[in-house]
Image (cartoon, rainbow, N blue to C red; front, side):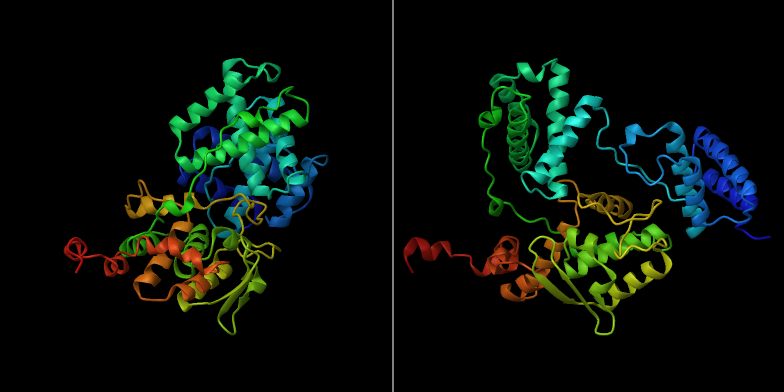
Length: 414
Protein backbone atom coordinates (compact mmCIF):
# COMPACT_ATOMS: atom_id res chain seq x y z
CA UNK A 1 0.00 0.00 0.00
CA UNK A 2 1.26 3.51 -0.86
CA UNK A 3 2.67 5.07 2.32
CA UNK A 4 1.43 8.46 1.11
CA UNK A 5 -2.13 7.20 0.64
CA UNK A 6 -4.20 9.61 2.75
CA UNK A 7 -5.45 6.99 5.24
CA UNK A 8 -2.11 5.27 5.83
CA UNK A 9 -0.28 8.61 5.81
CA UNK A 10 -2.51 10.07 8.53
CA UNK A 11 -2.25 6.86 10.59
CA UNK A 12 1.55 6.99 10.42
CA UNK A 13 1.51 10.71 11.23
CA UNK A 14 -0.58 10.21 14.38
CA UNK A 15 1.61 7.27 15.47
CA UNK A 16 4.69 9.49 15.13
CA UNK A 17 3.06 12.14 17.33
CA UNK A 18 2.56 9.48 20.02
CA UNK A 19 6.21 8.43 19.71
CA UNK A 20 7.27 12.08 20.12
CA UNK A 21 5.29 12.17 23.41
CA UNK A 22 2.86 14.89 22.37
CA UNK A 23 0.20 15.52 25.01
CA UNK A 24 -3.26 13.90 24.63
CA UNK A 25 -4.83 17.33 24.05
CA UNK A 26 -2.45 18.14 21.19
CA UNK A 27 -2.95 14.73 19.62
CA UNK A 28 -6.73 15.14 19.91
CA UNK A 29 -6.75 18.39 17.95
CA UNK A 30 -4.31 16.95 15.37
CA UNK A 31 -6.74 14.04 14.93
CA UNK A 32 -9.71 16.40 14.46
CA UNK A 33 -7.84 18.45 11.86
CA UNK A 34 -6.68 15.25 10.16
CA UNK A 35 -10.31 14.20 9.73
CA UNK A 36 -11.06 17.47 7.95
CA UNK A 37 -8.03 16.93 5.73
CA UNK A 38 -9.19 13.38 4.90
CA UNK A 39 -12.70 14.65 4.02
CA UNK A 40 -11.23 17.38 1.79
CA UNK A 41 -9.07 14.82 -0.02
CA UNK A 42 -12.10 12.61 -0.65
CA UNK A 43 -14.13 15.57 -1.93
CA UNK A 44 -11.30 16.44 -4.36
CA UNK A 45 -10.70 12.79 -5.33
CA UNK A 46 -7.10 13.06 -4.12
CA UNK A 47 -5.65 9.74 -2.99
CA UNK A 48 -2.13 10.68 -1.81
CA UNK A 49 -0.68 13.39 0.38
CA UNK A 50 1.75 15.93 -1.10
CA UNK A 51 3.11 19.39 -0.27
CA UNK A 52 0.87 20.86 -2.98
CA UNK A 53 -2.17 19.18 -1.43
CA UNK A 54 -1.34 20.72 1.97
CA UNK A 55 -1.26 24.23 0.44
CA UNK A 56 -4.46 23.56 -1.48
CA UNK A 57 -6.21 22.52 1.75
CA UNK A 58 -5.19 25.73 3.57
CA UNK A 59 -6.15 27.91 0.62
CA UNK A 60 -9.57 26.25 0.41
CA UNK A 61 -10.23 26.45 4.15
CA UNK A 62 -9.09 30.06 4.61
CA UNK A 63 -9.63 31.75 1.23
CA UNK A 64 -9.71 35.29 2.70
CA UNK A 65 -6.51 35.04 4.72
CA UNK A 66 -4.37 32.43 2.95
CA UNK A 67 -0.98 33.83 1.95
CA UNK A 68 -1.35 37.02 4.01
CA UNK A 69 1.17 37.85 6.75
CA UNK A 70 -0.64 38.82 9.96
CA UNK A 71 0.32 39.14 13.65
CA UNK A 72 -0.04 35.91 15.58
CA UNK A 73 -2.76 37.40 17.80
CA UNK A 74 -5.01 38.12 14.81
CA UNK A 75 -5.14 34.48 13.74
CA UNK A 76 -8.14 32.45 14.83
CA UNK A 77 -7.76 29.22 16.76
CA UNK A 78 -8.90 27.31 13.68
CA UNK A 79 -6.18 28.91 11.55
CA UNK A 80 -3.48 28.21 14.12
CA UNK A 81 -4.48 24.55 14.43
CA UNK A 82 -4.77 24.03 10.68
CA UNK A 83 -1.42 25.63 9.83
CA UNK A 84 0.33 23.77 12.62
CA UNK A 85 -1.13 20.45 11.46
CA UNK A 86 -0.06 21.02 7.86
CA UNK A 87 3.42 22.09 9.01
CA UNK A 88 3.85 18.86 10.96
CA UNK A 89 2.38 16.76 8.15
CA UNK A 90 4.84 18.30 5.69
CA UNK A 91 7.69 17.41 8.05
CA UNK A 92 6.41 13.85 8.20
CA UNK A 93 5.93 13.70 4.41
CA UNK A 94 9.45 14.99 3.59
CA UNK A 95 11.53 13.54 6.44
CA UNK A 96 9.43 10.65 7.73
CA UNK A 97 9.27 12.22 11.19
CA UNK A 98 7.74 15.24 12.96
CA UNK A 99 10.16 17.94 14.09
CA UNK A 100 9.21 19.52 17.39
CA UNK A 101 9.83 23.23 17.86
CA UNK A 102 8.78 26.42 19.62
CA UNK A 103 7.46 29.50 17.87
CA UNK A 104 8.90 32.80 18.99
CA UNK A 105 6.28 35.46 19.75
CA UNK A 106 7.45 39.04 19.96
CA UNK A 107 4.30 40.40 21.64
CA UNK A 108 3.70 37.83 24.38
CA UNK A 109 2.01 39.52 27.34
CA UNK A 110 1.77 42.93 25.63
CA UNK A 111 -1.63 44.73 25.58
CA UNK A 112 -3.02 45.26 22.08
CA UNK A 113 -2.57 49.10 22.02
CA UNK A 114 1.10 48.67 22.90
CA UNK A 115 1.53 46.08 20.16
CA UNK A 116 0.52 48.64 17.53
CA UNK A 117 2.74 51.26 19.18
CA UNK A 118 5.77 48.94 19.11
CA UNK A 119 5.07 48.02 15.48
CA UNK A 120 4.88 51.72 14.58
CA UNK A 121 8.10 52.39 16.51
CA UNK A 122 9.91 49.62 14.63
CA UNK A 123 8.77 51.11 11.32
CA UNK A 124 9.95 54.54 12.51
CA UNK A 125 13.41 53.11 13.26
CA UNK A 126 13.62 51.52 9.83
CA UNK A 127 12.19 54.29 7.65
CA UNK A 128 13.09 57.46 9.55
CA UNK A 129 16.39 56.43 11.09
CA UNK A 130 17.50 53.94 8.46
CA UNK A 131 17.99 51.15 11.01
CA UNK A 132 18.33 47.64 9.66
CA UNK A 133 15.42 45.34 10.36
CA UNK A 134 17.06 43.30 13.12
CA UNK A 135 18.34 46.47 14.85
CA UNK A 136 14.86 48.03 14.69
CA UNK A 137 13.40 44.85 16.20
CA UNK A 138 15.92 45.03 19.05
CA UNK A 139 14.86 48.63 19.73
CA UNK A 140 11.25 47.45 19.72
CA UNK A 141 12.01 44.69 22.21
CA UNK A 142 13.56 47.17 24.65
CA UNK A 143 10.64 49.56 24.19
CA UNK A 144 8.33 46.69 25.05
CA UNK A 145 10.05 46.20 28.41
CA UNK A 146 9.61 49.80 29.54
CA UNK A 147 5.99 49.76 28.35
CA UNK A 148 5.31 46.72 30.51
CA UNK A 149 7.08 48.46 33.42
CA UNK A 150 4.95 51.61 33.03
CA UNK A 151 1.78 49.49 32.80
CA UNK A 152 2.70 47.69 36.01
CA UNK A 153 3.18 51.06 37.71
CA UNK A 154 -0.08 52.40 36.28
CA UNK A 155 1.71 55.30 34.54
CA UNK A 156 0.22 56.84 31.38
CA UNK A 157 2.27 58.48 28.63
CA UNK A 158 0.82 61.87 29.51
CA UNK A 159 2.09 61.49 33.08
CA UNK A 160 5.62 60.24 32.40
CA UNK A 161 8.26 62.45 33.96
CA UNK A 162 12.01 62.49 34.43
CA UNK A 163 11.77 60.70 37.80
CA UNK A 164 10.06 57.69 36.18
CA UNK A 165 12.77 57.51 33.53
CA UNK A 166 15.59 57.68 36.09
CA UNK A 167 13.90 55.04 38.26
CA UNK A 168 13.69 52.63 35.30
CA UNK A 169 17.27 53.41 34.28
CA UNK A 170 18.52 52.49 37.77
CA UNK A 171 16.69 49.15 37.55
CA UNK A 172 18.45 48.43 34.24
CA UNK A 173 21.85 49.33 35.72
CA UNK A 174 21.29 47.05 38.73
CA UNK A 175 20.21 44.02 36.69
CA UNK A 176 22.22 44.08 33.46
CA UNK A 177 25.81 43.97 32.28
CA UNK A 178 27.49 47.14 31.05
CA UNK A 179 27.08 46.36 27.35
CA UNK A 180 23.40 45.53 27.79
CA UNK A 181 22.86 48.74 29.78
CA UNK A 182 24.48 50.81 27.04
CA UNK A 183 22.31 49.25 24.31
CA UNK A 184 19.14 49.60 26.38
CA UNK A 185 19.76 53.28 27.12
CA UNK A 186 20.43 53.92 23.42
CA UNK A 187 17.14 52.26 22.45
CA UNK A 188 15.25 54.20 25.13
CA UNK A 189 16.61 57.52 23.88
CA UNK A 190 15.29 56.66 20.42
CA UNK A 191 11.94 55.49 21.85
CA UNK A 192 11.31 58.61 23.91
CA UNK A 193 12.31 60.78 20.95
CA UNK A 194 9.74 58.84 18.91
CA UNK A 195 7.06 59.45 21.56
CA UNK A 196 7.84 63.16 21.50
CA UNK A 197 7.92 63.44 17.70
CA UNK A 198 4.57 61.61 17.40
CA UNK A 199 3.11 63.86 20.13
CA UNK A 200 2.39 61.04 22.52
CA UNK A 201 4.64 62.70 25.08
CA UNK A 202 4.59 66.45 25.65
CA UNK A 203 8.19 66.52 26.91
CA UNK A 204 11.28 65.18 25.13
CA UNK A 205 12.54 62.75 27.78
CA UNK A 206 15.22 61.30 25.51
CA UNK A 207 17.64 63.88 26.90
CA UNK A 208 17.12 62.49 30.42
CA UNK A 209 18.38 59.02 29.50
CA UNK A 210 22.00 58.83 30.72
CA UNK A 211 24.83 57.99 28.32
CA UNK A 212 26.57 54.77 29.32
CA UNK A 213 29.64 54.25 27.18
CA UNK A 214 31.27 50.86 26.87
CA UNK A 215 34.79 50.42 25.54
CA UNK A 216 34.64 47.26 23.41
CA UNK A 217 38.41 46.80 23.44
CA UNK A 218 38.27 46.43 27.22
CA UNK A 219 36.49 43.09 26.84
CA UNK A 220 38.19 39.74 26.39
CA UNK A 221 36.91 37.61 23.51
CA UNK A 222 35.25 34.34 24.48
CA UNK A 223 37.37 31.36 23.44
CA UNK A 224 36.47 27.66 23.51
CA UNK A 225 39.02 25.00 24.50
CA UNK A 226 39.95 22.77 21.55
CA UNK A 227 38.35 19.69 23.05
CA UNK A 228 35.06 21.52 23.68
CA UNK A 229 34.74 22.52 20.01
CA UNK A 230 35.20 18.86 19.03
CA UNK A 231 32.67 17.71 21.63
CA UNK A 232 30.18 20.34 20.45
CA UNK A 233 30.37 19.17 16.83
CA UNK A 234 30.25 15.49 17.79
CA UNK A 235 27.07 16.02 19.84
CA UNK A 236 24.99 16.94 16.77
CA UNK A 237 22.59 14.25 15.54
CA UNK A 238 23.64 14.14 11.90
CA UNK A 239 21.01 11.53 11.13
CA UNK A 240 18.12 14.02 11.41
CA UNK A 241 17.32 16.79 8.88
CA UNK A 242 17.58 19.49 11.54
CA UNK A 243 20.87 18.05 12.79
CA UNK A 244 22.33 18.11 9.27
CA UNK A 245 21.46 21.81 8.97
CA UNK A 246 22.80 22.72 12.42
CA UNK A 247 26.01 20.76 11.85
CA UNK A 248 26.69 22.53 8.54
CA UNK A 249 26.17 25.95 10.17
CA UNK A 250 28.40 25.08 13.12
CA UNK A 251 31.12 23.88 10.76
CA UNK A 252 31.04 27.15 8.82
CA UNK A 253 31.46 29.08 12.07
CA UNK A 254 34.08 26.80 13.66
CA UNK A 255 36.21 26.04 10.59
CA UNK A 256 35.87 29.25 8.55
CA UNK A 257 34.88 31.82 11.21
CA UNK A 258 31.95 33.01 9.09
CA UNK A 259 29.68 35.43 10.91
CA UNK A 260 26.12 34.59 11.98
CA UNK A 261 24.62 37.10 9.51
CA UNK A 262 26.66 35.79 6.59
CA UNK A 263 25.70 32.16 7.29
CA UNK A 264 22.01 33.14 7.13
CA UNK A 265 22.51 35.00 3.84
CA UNK A 266 24.52 32.30 2.02
CA UNK A 267 23.03 31.39 -1.35
CA UNK A 268 23.73 28.58 -3.78
CA UNK A 269 25.68 30.83 -6.15
CA UNK A 270 28.09 31.71 -3.31
CA UNK A 271 29.56 28.20 -3.51
CA UNK A 272 32.09 27.41 -6.24
CA UNK A 273 32.13 23.62 -6.01
CA UNK A 274 34.58 23.13 -8.88
CA UNK A 275 37.26 25.32 -7.31
CA UNK A 276 36.31 24.50 -3.70
CA UNK A 277 35.71 28.13 -2.74
CA UNK A 278 33.03 30.11 -0.96
CA UNK A 279 32.59 33.78 -1.89
CA UNK A 280 30.14 36.39 -0.60
CA UNK A 281 29.72 40.04 0.28
CA UNK A 282 29.92 40.35 4.07
CA UNK A 283 26.70 41.41 5.74
CA UNK A 284 28.51 43.60 8.29
CA UNK A 285 31.00 45.45 6.11
CA UNK A 286 29.71 44.95 2.58
CA UNK A 287 33.24 43.90 1.58
CA UNK A 288 33.71 40.79 -0.62
CA UNK A 289 35.33 37.76 1.00
CA UNK A 290 36.57 34.55 -0.62
CA UNK A 291 37.57 31.54 1.48
CA UNK A 292 38.73 28.01 0.62
CA UNK A 293 36.08 25.37 1.20
CA UNK A 294 37.64 22.57 3.30
CA UNK A 295 36.56 19.04 2.46
CA UNK A 296 34.84 18.40 5.81
CA UNK A 297 32.84 21.63 5.54
CA UNK A 298 31.95 20.88 1.92
CA UNK A 299 30.66 17.39 2.77
CA UNK A 300 28.59 18.81 5.66
CA UNK A 301 26.94 21.22 3.22
CA UNK A 302 26.35 18.48 0.63
CA UNK A 303 24.82 16.16 3.22
CA UNK A 304 22.40 18.88 4.31
CA UNK A 305 21.47 19.94 0.78
CA UNK A 306 20.90 16.39 -0.46
CA UNK A 307 19.43 14.73 2.61
CA UNK A 308 18.15 17.35 5.04
CA UNK A 309 17.00 20.59 3.40
CA UNK A 310 13.22 20.88 2.93
CA UNK A 311 12.22 21.07 -0.75
CA UNK A 312 11.60 24.72 -1.65
CA UNK A 313 12.49 27.27 -4.32
CA UNK A 314 14.45 29.56 -1.97
CA UNK A 315 17.94 30.58 -3.12
CA UNK A 316 19.27 30.67 0.43
CA UNK A 317 21.14 27.55 1.49
CA UNK A 318 19.82 27.51 5.06
CA UNK A 319 16.08 27.69 5.62
CA UNK A 320 13.65 27.09 8.46
CA UNK A 321 12.30 23.57 8.85
CA UNK A 322 8.74 24.71 9.49
CA UNK A 323 6.17 24.96 6.73
CA UNK A 324 6.52 26.93 4.61
CA UNK A 325 10.33 26.67 4.50
CA UNK A 326 11.87 30.14 4.22
CA UNK A 327 15.15 31.98 4.88
CA UNK A 328 15.91 33.01 8.44
CA UNK A 329 14.86 36.46 9.58
CA UNK A 330 17.65 39.01 9.73
CA UNK A 331 17.18 39.26 13.51
CA UNK A 332 17.51 35.48 14.07
CA UNK A 333 20.41 34.52 16.29
CA UNK A 334 21.79 31.00 16.60
CA UNK A 335 22.85 31.08 20.25
CA UNK A 336 20.09 28.57 21.04
CA UNK A 337 21.76 26.09 18.67
CA UNK A 338 25.08 26.44 20.48
CA UNK A 339 23.36 26.12 23.88
CA UNK A 340 21.44 23.05 22.73
CA UNK A 341 24.49 21.07 21.60
CA UNK A 342 26.71 22.30 24.42
CA UNK A 343 24.16 20.87 26.84
CA UNK A 344 24.04 17.58 24.93
CA UNK A 345 27.84 17.45 24.98
CA UNK A 346 27.97 18.14 28.71
CA UNK A 347 29.91 21.40 28.22
CA UNK A 348 29.54 24.05 30.90
CA UNK A 349 29.19 27.41 29.11
CA UNK A 350 28.38 29.46 32.19
CA UNK A 351 30.00 32.88 31.91
CA UNK A 352 30.94 32.26 28.28
CA UNK A 353 29.59 33.86 25.12
CA UNK A 354 27.10 31.39 23.68
CA UNK A 355 26.56 32.45 20.07
CA UNK A 356 28.19 31.32 16.84
CA UNK A 357 30.45 34.38 17.10
CA UNK A 358 32.31 32.73 19.98
CA UNK A 359 33.46 30.03 17.54
CA UNK A 360 34.79 32.78 15.27
CA UNK A 361 36.76 34.21 18.21
CA UNK A 362 38.09 30.74 18.95
CA UNK A 363 39.42 30.16 15.42
CA UNK A 364 41.12 33.58 15.40
CA UNK A 365 42.86 32.77 18.69
CA UNK A 366 44.00 29.36 17.44
CA UNK A 367 45.48 30.98 14.32
CA UNK A 368 47.45 33.37 16.54
CA UNK A 369 48.71 30.46 18.60
CA UNK A 370 49.88 28.83 15.35
CA UNK A 371 51.98 31.95 14.63
CA UNK A 372 49.79 33.12 11.75
CA UNK A 373 50.47 36.85 11.33
CA UNK A 374 47.70 39.36 12.26
CA UNK A 375 47.34 40.70 8.67
CA UNK A 376 46.65 37.16 7.40
CA UNK A 377 44.16 36.50 10.21
CA UNK A 378 42.44 39.80 9.45
CA UNK A 379 42.11 38.74 5.80
CA UNK A 380 40.66 35.34 6.76
CA UNK A 381 38.12 36.93 9.11
CA UNK A 382 37.18 39.60 6.60
CA UNK A 383 37.99 42.52 8.88
CA UNK A 384 37.66 45.99 7.39
CA UNK A 385 40.77 47.03 9.35
CA UNK A 386 43.70 44.80 10.33
CA UNK A 387 43.87 46.49 13.76
CA UNK A 388 40.66 44.64 14.72
CA UNK A 389 42.80 41.54 15.28
CA UNK A 390 44.37 43.28 18.28
CA UNK A 391 41.49 42.17 20.50
CA UNK A 392 42.63 38.53 20.09
CA UNK A 393 46.16 39.34 21.21
CA UNK A 394 44.78 39.75 24.73
CA UNK A 395 44.03 36.02 24.99
CA UNK A 396 47.16 34.77 23.21
CA UNK A 397 48.89 33.67 26.42
CA UNK A 398 51.85 32.16 24.58
CA UNK A 399 52.47 35.39 22.71
CA UNK A 400 51.95 37.55 25.80
CA UNK A 401 54.62 35.57 27.69
CA UNK A 402 57.16 36.75 25.12
CA UNK A 403 56.34 40.33 26.11
CA UNK A 404 56.77 39.73 29.85
CA UNK A 405 59.29 41.96 31.62
CA UNK A 406 61.86 40.70 34.11
CA UNK A 407 61.08 42.42 37.47
CA UNK A 408 64.77 42.25 38.47
CA UNK A 409 65.83 44.04 35.32
CA UNK A 410 63.19 46.71 35.88
CA UNK A 411 64.21 47.26 39.53
CA UNK A 412 67.95 47.39 38.97
CA UNK A 413 67.91 49.03 35.55
CA UNK A 414 69.75 46.18 33.91
